[in-house]
Amino acid sequence: MATAKKTLLAFGIVILIMTSSSMVLFLASGNVNNAGQIRVACVGDSITEGSGYTVSLQAMLGAGYLVGNFGVSGSTVMLSSDKPYMNQLAFQKAKMFQPSIVVIMLGTNDARQNVTKLVDKFQADYRRLIEAYQTLESDPEIWLVKPPPIFENNLNLNNTNLEKDVIPSIDQVANELDLSTIDINQLLLEHPEYFGDGVHPNSEAAYLIASEISQALASNGS
Image (cartoon, rainbow, N blue to C red):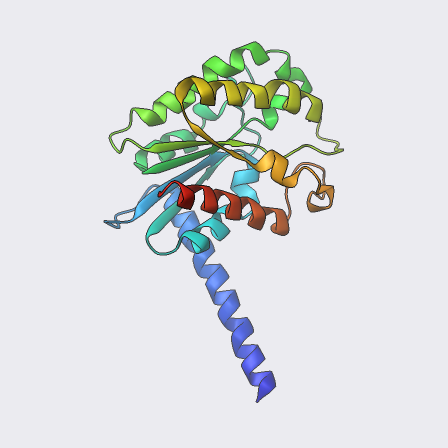
C-alpha cells in the first residue's frame, strides 16, 4: 500500500510539472484570454528562457497570475550587439501579452567581452526597452532584475564586466526612472555550485530566483 501511494504521489508531481510547463509555454505565445488574472511577462535571455524559473514562479504566485516566458537565448540590452532583445520576436510577443507586470532580467550577454566595450550605450538602450513596456495600454509595473553572477566559463562572459559596468548601469536607470530592482546577483554570489557551466543556473538556483521575484512582487502588493 505504501509503495502504491508513493507511485501515485510521484505520478501527481510529474503531471503538475507537465501542466505548469505547458501553461508557461502557452502563455509565451501571447494567446491569453483569462480575464481577471494578473499577467507577468518575464523578459530575458537564456536564463529566463531555459532555467525553469518561470515555471516555479507560476506555481508560487498561484492561479491569480499568468506567467509568460519571453526569454531569448543570447539576447542583450544593447542594440549595437549582434542579438539585441528588442530585435527579437519575443519582444513583440511580450508587448502583445499586455502584461500587468514586466520582470526584466537582461545584462548577462552585455558582459561579453566584445559587447561590453560599447557599454556607454547600455543605459540609453535599457531606457528604450523599458519605455516600450511603460507605454503599453496595460500600463505595467516594471521590475528590473540584477542578473546572476558569472563564474568561470568558456562562453566569453566576464563577471568583472558585469559587476563594474552592467549592474551599475541597471542601478542608474532604476534610480532615474524610479523603478524597483530585484538583486539576484547578491542572492547567488556565494553559490558557484548552482552553475554547471559557470553561467546558467541549475534547478536549485532557478527555484531561488523564482522565490526572490515572487517575494518582491508580494511585498509590493503586486
